[in-house]
Image (cartoon, rainbow, N blue to C red; front, top):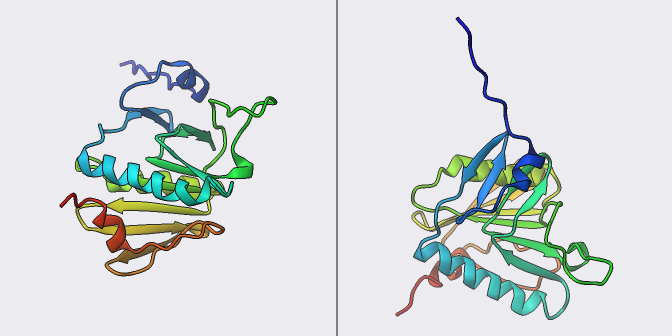
Length: 186
């Protein structure tokens, strides 16, 4: 009996493929398509980027990018929000931003969608942490909680009126309640 082994795709081969909608990630030789963002996910992502960029961009401290492909450590992931310190944003010699970010974000935020595996999303944040990301958030709208991921694979759970950690240098204060209040349109 013969066994056929399907050759795994390399990271370089994956990066040459056309982008998908929603985005696909390359993790351990596999292509995994992210779920299509729904209402809560889109609102949290948009409001978070706006909230951070109102303070951090004007002061040239950092910038929050929605759905930005980040390729590092043998994987290519697309965090829901990737925050980069201003001095780490990859630029061309002309000063214009590059299209390819081949470095880890300083702060990675993932928002769980109903059909998404919390374990796989947390694994992406842990990958970020292992490669230098200073802070990760795993936002769970169903549980109204946020897991903070810190260097050394330390994970903390935040709920209710608890203040949540922000990337050092960004003068913002947020609680879990404030983040989830963004979902109310009444």
